[in-house]
Image (cartoon, rainbow, N blue to C red; front, top):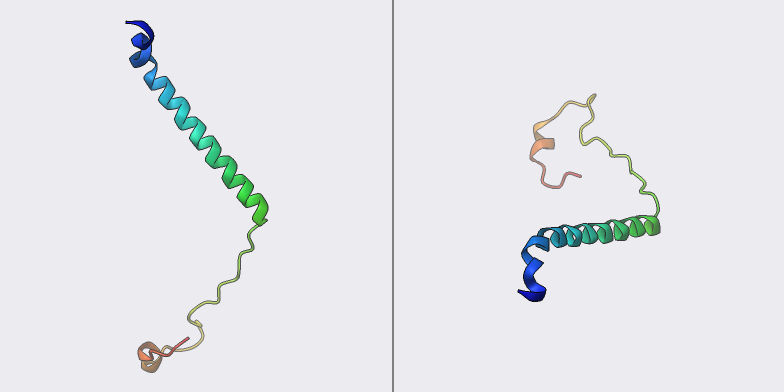
Length: 66
């Protein structure tokens, strides 16, 4: 049997270690990238429709609306 005798018995453990290593590297890369970019600033979204303004047919069908 020799060297390859325990291959099947340790295959699952090696695959799990490999997956953990891969995930750890990805997490480190993500943390490094986020640290480099700095905190994200959320921009305020302007509501598309003003609740005090009535909706007209022209507003709904105008292709050049903003």
